[in-house]
Length: 235
Image 1 (cartoon, rainbow, N blue to C red):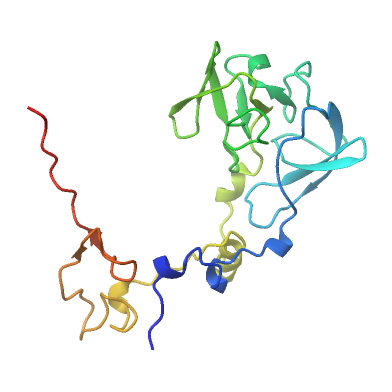
Image 2: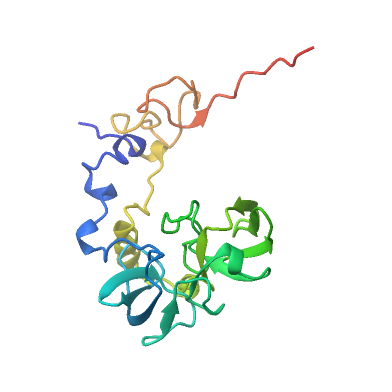
């Protein structure tokens, strides 16, 4: 009996391969609210499913989990209001950040808790300020933000993770499993015909045209998608 293809079972929540172990996650990682003016870092923790460490910050008895910035330490004070210093770990509105400053965990809309630039070792550069704040993203693209949006000053910690090898396949398996991903990929031509449309044969070969229609169902849409139809220009 065959099995579902990867694109069929991804995201359904019924396959252990793509189910993230949410019971091991440390919690929601976001920026503190505007009403919280200042806090202190009480712990720096590892978060399963993330490549960067997270900081547990105490704001007058209420704990918030934030992405850790490079260079922060336990016991450091964190400022949230716009009057805070431009130091690593402080949360400030983009209107108060000088041009040329590196920031991360940027809000897409004021008060949404931070949506952009959250991967380990990444940061965005503030280019110009005016009615909109123009920032250069890690991809090199330029994006405009509302000056009221907030961000964390500095670079996301954990940027050196790519320098450490996994060492063995088991470590890579568990690391990807925490991120709800499967790092191993089997070629379709290496499978049996019951498992994949490209499978079967006395030796590895597709055996049929690998181009498929864009209207094909998910189980059939494997290989190369057919090219788009030529669009006729207006005369």
